Figure 1 (spheres, rainbow, N blue to C red):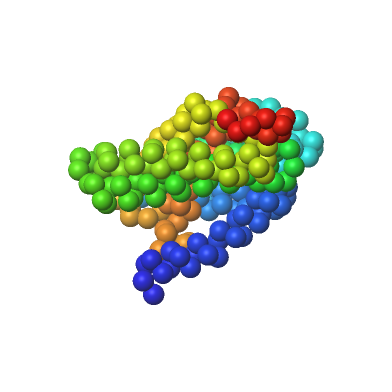
Figure 2 (figure 1 turned 90 degrees about the vertical axis):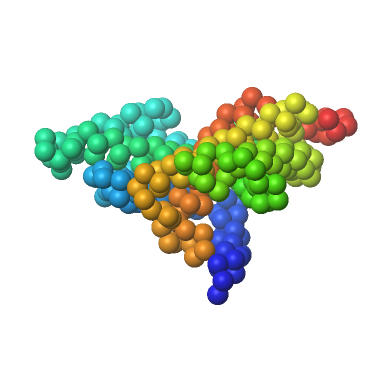
Length: 292
């Protein structure tokens, strides 16, 4: 089976499962985020070890898996919202490092890489749950779309970069980090994401969720999401280049690991949450008006 065939097969199986869990929300979505966080953090620690660090892998993976479940507990009212869980992470890790690494076990690097693994993977993925229950998400359809839209825009950015980079080529964007990426690809990614934002707003958000962006909001949302998505992709490339590894894992045949598939999503989800607060407006049709 060719690499393209494997990619298509994985997408056909994985996409409906992910969409279904996003639609269900609640415990199923929290379980999905927890599972992906655990795998992604393990892949991150694999890269960190290859780069010469010594993270506390079982502890980091465990915390990464728990964090989305804590967000779910907050949503249910079982835990009071606050920054305490995030503050406790480095304290727990540093305390564990005292016994697990000692003075001769490079404790600073061990603790730092362990904490970074949690903050890089589980913390952003927890925003999938936060987006599902965003204050503008009235009903299951709106909640699901609040998660799906930034994910689809991430794919649009990646697709735009791929085709414009292949068709136009030209100057490299950051050759020391990712030799295949070009400036033309980066610009194409932004254009594709802005167009996709406009299409999703008019075709999905307005009729199904009664939400919209102003024309300026559409432009800002698309540009920022694309730029952030590309930064996320480059960051993972930078980490892999330091470690000398090609893929973060082999979970998805033809796609690599969870980090390889979600590197941009890690950056996009929390940024989308902020942009929704700043840019989303009720769709004019909800008040009987015309389209913006």
